[in-house]
Image (cartoon, rainbow, N blue to C red; front, side, top):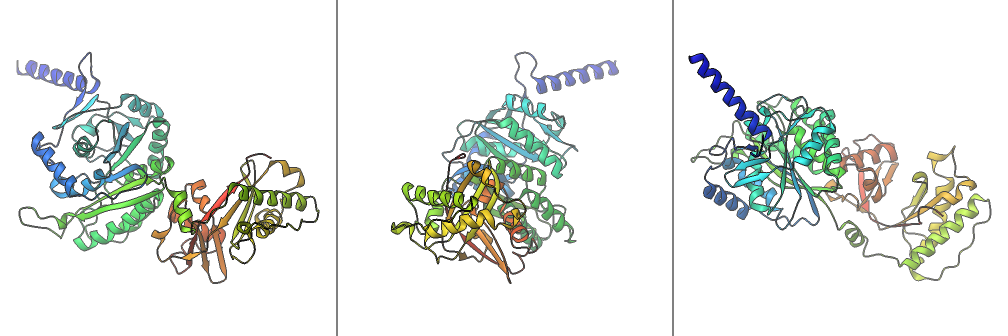
Amino acid sequence: MKEIIALFLTLGALGLLILSCKGEGSAAAIRSPAVAGSFYPDSPSELKKMVEGFLARATDAEIEGQIVALLSPHAGYVFSGQVAAYSYKQLKNREFDDVIIIGPSHCLYLKGASVGSWDYYQTPLGKVEVDMELVEKLKAANPEIKFTPAAHSREHAVEVQLPFLQCVLSEFKLVPIIMGNPSPENCQMLSDALINAIGNKKVLLVASSDMSHYPRYVDACRVDRQTLEVIESLAPLKLLQSSRQILGQGIPNLDCTLCGLGAVTTVLMTAKRLGATGVKVLKYVNSGDVSVMGRTNRNRVVGYGSAAVYKSNKLEMEGQKRAGDFTLTEEQKAALLQIARRTLNCCLRKEKIPEFQVQDPGLRQKRGVFVTLTNQGKLRGCIGHFAPDTPLYRLVSQMTVAAATQDYRFAYDLITVDELPEIRIEISVLSPMRRIKSIGEIRMGVDGIYVRMGNRAGTFLPQVATETGWSKIEFLERCCSDKAGLSPDAWIKGAEIYTYTALVFHESEKK
């Protein structure tokens, strides 16, 4: 008899699990909270009061531009709630179609990723609807993305973010993702699936992760600051490398640099592909900074950081400001492009370059210039001159000749006269260079960089960062190695770094 009762109870429990996971019939499938009453209050009024208190004490960083992603910790609110509030404070007066939360799997080994396929996620503050259309697209994108209920049922990484979102956003749908292996391949796989699934939706990515686990207080502060610097450089693969390097130092009791290393890496990868241009670290503390019942423990701590990843909408305006408000009228730009075109035609046809007579004071200014030549998007020559020692119109003509005939990369494949109809000319008029003390002063997409060590030097124009999607560190490393012939880490080892801005304009795609 006991065996029969046990069998019925087992079948009944299994039926409830299937119903809750798949939403049979008219019943909605709801993922119930797993850590309400432990990680955060289970009373709606107490929870709302706590979250709103955290938000009231957080600072609005006044980020100018579109927020693409957030880094937020996921420990119990008494430890990390105030840090998380710094991230969610930045969402004031912003709207999103979907919030995609990616967290690590604390309870179950996963090879790929699991996306929660419930209709709703429940918290004490109410239900959050899951965007099942996007969920299904993700599952269809790659066989490594599945729905594994056990990966979510007791997992807190996604859940603890929801009360903050419910307090700061009026309306949104959720896409809950739990990641397994934080390998470069797994991160890239999930990022590819996300990019394909997102389409035209306006989404917010959230990387749910705590930082260093269990070192001494002083070691945690050092390790976490190093990790936050890499995050701030918007360099996802460098983040993986940095984690391996730090863990190889033998720091006592250090278990990890980020428990959600894969989640943070994937979010940075995806944010960059969605146009993110910068990261702002908002707050850092660790558990050694928190007093619980009048006591603190600084022998074994966990780090908590918050950050916002954003896409600036003021890059062009900032570049103009850095350049001293230098500008040219459309007529002046057209005149310089015409000078460059006539020069190129004569150069390739072996004719004498005209002695241009220009009286316009704006075109007689002395500024550095780069001229770039492309053929259907492929580079065919780029040469410039930094020193403001030649009238602008004359330097444009000189650099056009140089770009067509002196770029060593095309020494055995120079532009031919037959290419003339397909060549597009781009002119970059430069601001004066300014030496910087910290790479934090470089604004990706705004500043060009000039690196010099000894008698070797190289430069990248501002637009290179936008065209390649490189991180700040990649931008510097490639300039050192590819352009200056130095070691990639020369920028760390004493090379001088200068920045400048450029007023960039070009011909239409075809002539």
